[in-house]
Length: 295
Length: 199
Image 1: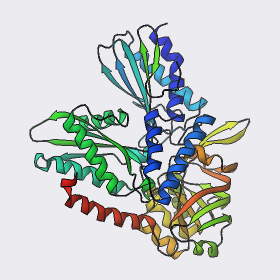
Image 2: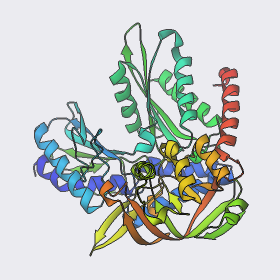
Image 3: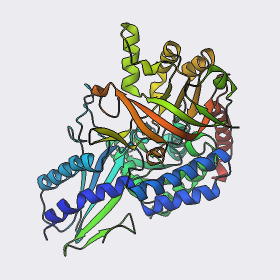
Image 4: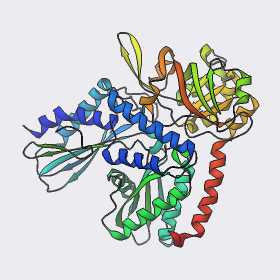
């Protein structure tokens, strides 16, 4: 079967999986959070979150009514498909899913605020494409709600502000955001690069599962320290006080100009929804985000 | 304290609620978020009639997913949205319509806090992101107004049963759970900065 045909057949299911079931790592992290939380209000919020996950899974309902803007991250290995073909398949799947699942029509014109009613608009959904030489095609659906997206931030720090400046900016962003991005949050950080690359890296960092540190030890160490600092603020679940404020901190980095220190901070709500599917040359399909799903 | 309330909620019932109390609410609630707040404010300004449901209402900051089936609307997912976006508009609506309770997530600012105290209203938090959970508590869609704003921004009138546990987080006496938490968080942050060798 051609890759085109497989995508046409499978993409609706992948979108549905993304909005109705959390990835295995996130569900596990939320269960662990309930074990660690000590405040009554914090525990109550986490129990409602876990109950909500069960209801969504059992009844095939969107976990959260804000099914967000659907972002697509694609890795193209050794396969033959054109950008136009992929984009057309994605657009059609988004339109169908809006009607069939249904997901909320949340895409509007930025100025007139007119809703397109099908989650497709100017340059939306957006495709982020990477090329590699692997023997597969990989696609991740990343629905991003506005509660957390509105709290993302970008800083152009000076080189002398250094690592301490990075840590302060991240913690202060979390404190300012309070309960708005639906803690316990996941934080994706992009260090270095340029202004746009730092923000892109922060999204790449969010795409890495929880519990998987950066392979470079000095970066992994910053991830762990920042997570501890953030949880020691005791902002807590939903910003109502408690011991679990963040589920994880992931960092990606790039080299940068000798005069710059760009910092991108990506915030993700506890409903850290994403679904990743890999299609091999043989036509074999593998889900990476959800163990129990599909094939 | 755990309280079960039914709409219309009286002023006496609101005054009794204190920060930290839990509420289970039954009866009629209306959804309103960014666009509905903007339109309500505009209608106040030009003296145009808004739907009766705003009077003495419980306002739920929510933009639900709904589906029309056999001519009837059905709720698919309907958790709370971030309340702070309504901060610059809410106090006027509380004053004009006598809103008794606001349900949302993340808390609101000082303008709203002042209006809650002055006009005896209360802000309750519900767990964000729990759209599927809330469908169990919504028994019926009674009506919809301002549907021209689009389904997420329209004013939906829901009949709910035991919607909760809602946490009273800003009460009618000036109590504010978000401010209490924020104060503690700032103190903790100072300690974190002073003990960076620990991290």
